Length: 93
Image (cartoon, rainbow, N blue to C red; front, side, top):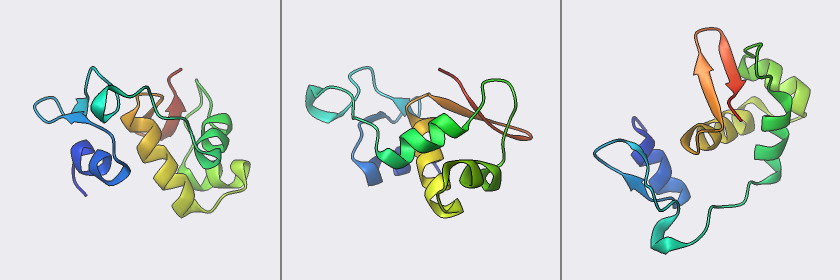
């Protein structure tokens, strides 16, 4: 995977290919936004708005594997809820 569009295709979310951002309609077919999985909720809750955290730290705080954390971070990044900074990940909302 090299783009958000490829990641979105794997999880079944519509993406505007020109912008490489989620489309204005959210999910494909005009459906409402997708609900977060329990892993995504745990990862989101383990992040801070101010202090960036590396995936290993998020894994420790959430009780998930690093691989599960990376997957959840990718999905949360696609929906715009988290951002990667030079020193780790932070919550946006």
